Each structure stands twice: as C-alpha cells, then as structure tokens.
Image (cartoon, rainbow, N blue to C red):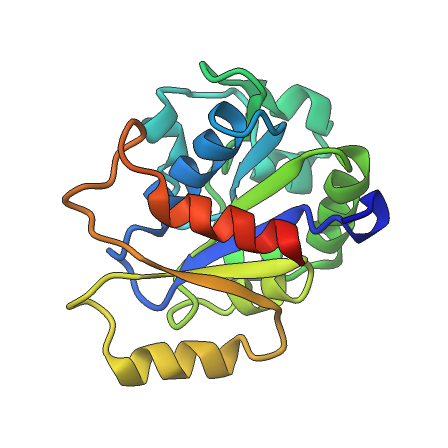
Length: 202
C-alpha cells in the first residue's frame, strides 16, 4: 500500500446503542498503537453520549465541539494518552444540535484538515448508532471506510440489514462481533487484529 492509497480515516458505528462500538473504537486504537506501533488519533464524535474519555481516564479541556463551534485549534484540543503513539480528541462541550453540527461544512472541513494534517496516522472515529441518528450517515461519506460493531441479542437481523442499507454508499471494512463481557482495554485483540491485517492488504 502506498502512502497515497493509505486509508487512514475509519468510522466505527453500530445499529443501536449498547453494542459496544465505543469500547471497540478504544480497543482498536490501543491495539494499533501498542501492538503494531502505529501512530493513532482516536476521535469521540458521539456528541450525544461521549464515553471514550472515561475509558481512557481523560478529561480534556477542549474537544471536537469546541473546535467546530469556537474555532479552537486541533493542536490545543488533541491530547496525549497513557499509551505511546495514541492521541485523543474528545467530544468536547455539550451542544444542542449535534446532528446539524456534525453534518455541517465545518465538520467536513475539520475532518479534511485532520486527514491531511495527520496523514501518517490512523484516525479512528467513534460515532452515534447509525439507525438512531442522522449524523453518522453524513460522517460515513467523509471517511475512507466504516467498521460496524454487532452485539448478539441487541440489533436484529433486519436492523443490521437496515443499517447496511443506510450506509451502502460507504466502504465497509468489516463487521466486529462484540461480546461486551470480554471487552476491555487490556483484553483480547483478535477481532481487531483480523480487521487490521485485512485492511493492510487492500
């Protein structure tokens, strides 16, 4: 894979809430940084229910919403984590119109800036559930690929089908079957390792 072909922006979503998309995003970012030595930026774009800061034990002053609303420079909003080569952009301050904000030209411009400003690193973006909120569809059109998280007993087969139909314009990189009972930042990375190796071959 040449640098020109490097697919570095990956959106992570699920059909419904409670399927483990956020912990999957965190685990994937940690795995890429720790196990594969890749430089990674983890972005919490779930402005409705941000949780990545809790997983990482971080409370940044600024985040994504602050950059979009107030023009805070990304360099001030992005913080280092306890994992080498892993940086984090939190959701930032609470907003009343997350769908409008994440579907705006400002978000498109900011994501383009992130992609080119950090062209040498993976950018993992956690987003709201695709069947519940419109902003995920808008964001899926701006990234290089989408990783879907499915938890047995949460989304139905019809729901999964509806989600795939909703995201049909995006490049599907893979589907992660998630068992939340075993998911942790220090747990098994076998699912994510398979995804990474598959993506490297493309």
